[in-house]
Image (cartoon, helix red, strand yellow):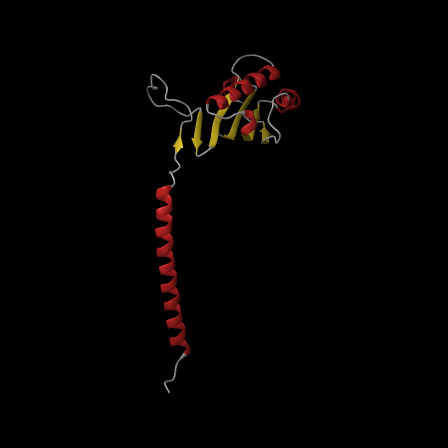
Length: 164
């Protein structure tokens, strides 16, 4: 009877396990490749029709970007002298318009980020914010006051993540 060592047994077992794993990975990658051919590839895109005429020069940011059915809207501010209530209404009306143009709505917002020039405006901003229809389940929200304020002398800036 041939004497078998544990080392030989372990080595042969490891080789067999590696071979089985490799075969399984090859089979799954073929499945994954076949599935990816049948499903469209997700890519970053603009949810709006192309501008006519197209923009000239280098554009710094997009008003919105879609990825699959997710929609990411840039921050909107109100760049005029006015009260926090006026600025909040202007910003929310503009966001609502941008969402609608992209095929979404305030009711489809998942995340809202509010940037206030002064946290003392929090209650007044909330009175206006609360008057809008955010749907049965309101979006999650973060409200902060950046140390250096809001660009363009706006009292508020809001950006959103929604779905289409």
